[in-house]
Image (cartoon, rainbow, N blue to C red):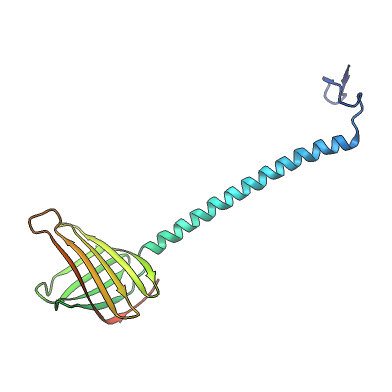
Amino acid sequence: MTRVTPFAGKANPAPPYGGLVPPLYAVYRQNHSCKSKTRIMKQLGSLVFTLLFITCQAVAQEKQDEHLLDGTSMNYYYETGNAVHIKFEQGVAEWEWIAGPWKGSVGREKYRSRKIGDKMYLVNFLEEGPSTFVTLVFNFNQNVMWSSVLLLPQTENEQVWFDGGIIEQLVLKEN
């Protein structure tokens, strides 16, 4: 048995229950369909929120990893007697040797930093040209620092420096 729906103009198979659709069944079908769509929309909304949250965290982490010491300057004095004045501005570390055999030598490189504790920072940069990799750890609570330097790697003059010192004349601006 088929029925003709006046609005569609097409023949449709007979609905269940002998041609009469109980109102509750029709409501169930309609609500079931809405519930599925609502559930899918909620899941999609949750997914979009999660992706936005992860993206914001990645951007925040990128900021956290980069130029956190911009506006900071100091002198640090190594146990060996060498000393450096360094300042951080606009993502660049600028330094000048103020004591020791390299006194008067200057350098300027882009740097990266990460906060590793309360007023403690890890900084690194790569000196272009002769390719010297520098890692510095600053503890501004105790005014001490440590450095690990790979100077002129893979050359006859390669050196590894691992030294510590004290910080003086600190102007700290934490970003």
